[in-house]
Structures are given as C-alpha cells and as structure tokens.
Length: 168
Picture: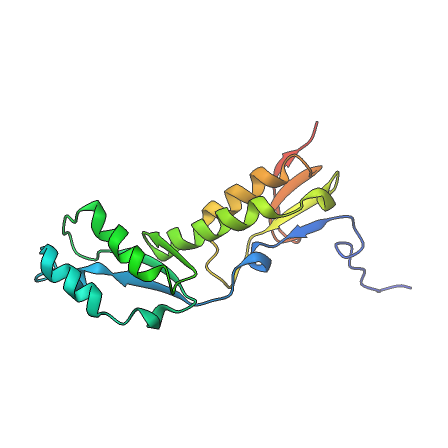
C-alpha cells in the first residue's frame, strides 16, 4: 500500500533497556545534620546526642534517606553513623551523601539481581531520556551488566541512538 507508514523499530529485534523500569518507588529525603550542630557548624556531643534522642524519627518511615551536612562543618565520622542508627528502624535505606548518591546506591542493589539473559545476542538500546532522576552511574553499571549478553549496545532513543558497542 503506497504511503503506508511502517514502524521499523517496532518490527525489529531491537530491545529497549529502560532504567526507569527499575526505579524504586518511595519517597527520597535528604537529611541535613547541620540542624543539630551549634550554629550549624560545631558538633557538641552532648547536645547532638540529646537532639537526636528527641527527634521524631517516625517521619522517615519507609523512606530512602541521604544524610548530608549543608554547611562547611567538619563533623566526626561517628555522627553520620549515629544518625543512621536512629534512622535504621524506620528508613528503607540510608546513605551518606546526596540524593544522587542515594539513587546510585539503590541501582547498585537492584542491577546485579536482574536476569539479563533475554538480551542474549540481540541489539539493544539503553534508553536515554528519563522523567525520573536516574543517575549516570546507573547507566554505566547497566552497560557493564548488559555487555556480555547484547550483540550491540546503543544509547538514546530508537530515532537517534548513539552506537556504543558491537560484538566482534
């Protein structure tokens, strides 16, 4: 039929690997420990411990939490560990760092558990556009897991994919 539009991508063996499909549901929170420091900069152990003891930790129930300090304060390593111990009974996961560090840690937990065998010998696109904050480190990790299986790996969208790898 003349003028008929054929979707060659839909009819090809091309597989799409979309990291958004594995983005864990749940609220992400960045917890700033400077709120418990004297004038935001000085950790006074007794006051710090007391403030942690009186903090409502239940508000982090089933959340993913990234602990950080927004000031230039130099805080001892044990302070983040102590905050983590208060969070642990409530939060799904706790990391020290940014929300991107948190998402990186989540993908480091998820990607090793996936079965990549369905991509064996197939051309593959790692989908590039995302409406969720998928960190670049997740794309790098996914490519490492996919490489032994895929015949070829591209990045982006089917209409404008960048070739990255092709088996010899």
